[in-house]
Structure formats: C-alpha cells, structure tokens
Image 1 (cartoon, rainbow, N blue to C red):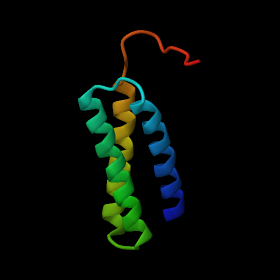
Image 2 (image 1 turned 120 degrees about the horizontal axis):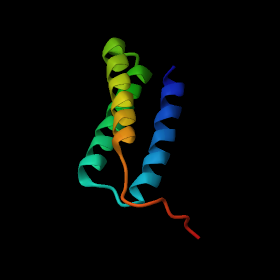
Image 3 (image 1 turned 30 degrees about the vertical axis):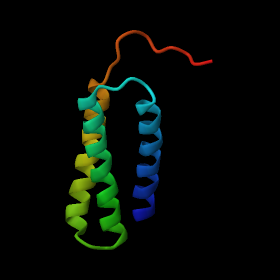
Image 4 (image 1 turned 90 degrees about the vertical axis):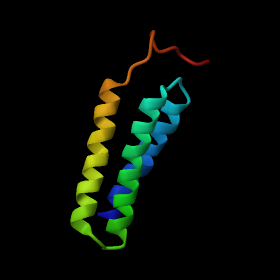
Length: 83
C-alpha cells in the first residue's frame, strides 16, 4: 500500500511541477503544496507502519484538497501550445 501511495505522490509532484511552470497565483500554489505535503507525510507514516488511521485521513484529506483546488484553478485566457 505504501508503494502505491508513493507512486501517486510522485505522479502528483510531476503534475505540480508542470503546473508551477505556468503562472500560478500564490494562494493556489500554497494550497497545492499543503495538499501534496499531506499526501507525502501520510505515505511516510504508512511506510513506517505508524499511526495508520491518521495516515489514511491525512492522505485522503490531501488528495481531496488537491482535487478541489484543481477544480477551482483557472488561468486567464486559453492554454497556449509551447513550441
């Protein structure tokens, strides 16, 4: 389970690195970082087999936070293709 959660965290970090390459408002960036920190911290707790119920809650709260921020995240204008 820890390996699966770690794979999700790595995938989200990749997406956030892409997103932070674009113009990102400070509040949105902070919310993204809080969500990924919750997910990463919870993954470490699962990896160490400590506080599993707390880790489960933390991981899912972080995941939901990321999803809600992503739903509300928008930029002015259309997405431009980078050549």
